[in-house]
Length: 114
Length: 110
Image (cartoon, rainbow over all chains, first blue to last red; front, side, top):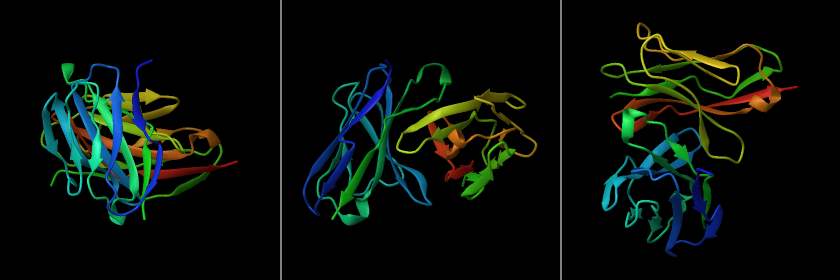
């Protein structure tokens, strides 16, 4: 089954404790992206990647890091989480062939930073 | 700058009512347009799309027509069900990216 998986689905942590949210896709997509979703603000892009070893900042990259060592994986790293990073996070992937632009989303990770 | 604007929610309707969720966009050219739906506790999934002017996207009884004259892509459904309760996002393509609207929460009461 074609899918995007994220782990963990729920996480409660404390300020300053490094964490990683994993994202994996099995569709051989070149493009992957991380979004955060906050009430009233819709989806805001954090980082995206066009292919292996290529990453770029989105609209709200501060406080986040990403890496793309393999095509299927795109982890999101919070080196020193703060309460304002409490949010719902989504990973998405997309094929860059054919100009389709359809993005496939993971189920989301709800993060609470105390 | 270029953007996507959706009507604010929540939108509350009774079952079998007619639904319209407005979406307008600004862009140079004629980008592909999308509606995504997010059911409670889930990620977003594509509902329908239109890739050129005057195209009509449709799925699950929902429709949206790409109107270049009014730069709009309003989502409609003739008779909503409780199971349609969700958050709906309008988006337009910009190269390989998607530019998102803020989302509209739809609540359908039995």
